Length: 87
Length: 209
Image (cartoon, rainbow over all chains, first blue to last red; front, side, top):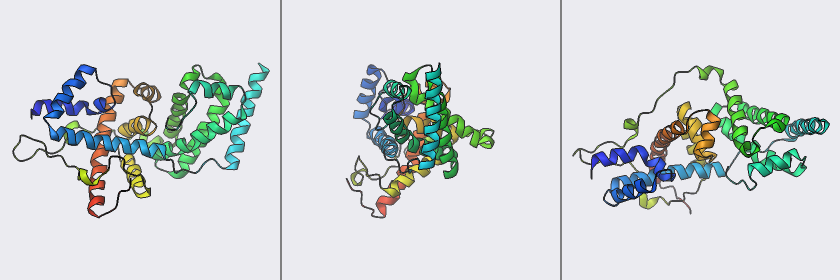
């Protein structure tokens, strides 16, 4: 394992995960990963923690707006529409 | 945003056309998300509820003045972020904590040649961990413990799944800063969650698929 490479790759792992790096850089990283189980393991754990955040975002536990809140919002919406129609 | 079906442009057009269904759809899609976003930003349930409500009120009062309807989602989160700032006046002046890459890197092993990866046992952790209530709250706690600078980016990029450019627009920083802060925020989260997962695995908690 070349420690210098690991350090450089470590700083860019999120961009690699998000597909934000140029294809040539990805090829270079993947060649490094093939010979570096530590980097692969670290990448896996970073990906897992990002994926947990994605799952978290997709499963909202907060209750929806109550009736009073909904009525307030509807009033603001109708007011905006009325102003628009009056133009 | 996770779970969205209509594009921002379509949703904005339907709202401006007075489509009652679009109104309900919009409130249902955004209210809970905004409340969660604000809770993780502000740290108080009551504030979060108010921020969600105030944000949606501002959206409905002025959506006809939105210059670029294709950026509806970005606009909504910018309003929410400003509302959060209003709730957290004091912390705006709080000293900023910086996370350093070196501190977030796994510790070096004794031989100095390789890095010891502190990681939960991979064999016992499925890639698609089921997000039960306990894990959910562990994720929420880990996010809340991030310093503001990083939490605001992680929330928009990894929880709300906004693009780098969208998050940059909401936070009024450069895309480059979004990338840097996201990476550090993720590394800190990884550290916390990994530690949690490892303990949980050792305690024999079953991970269902």
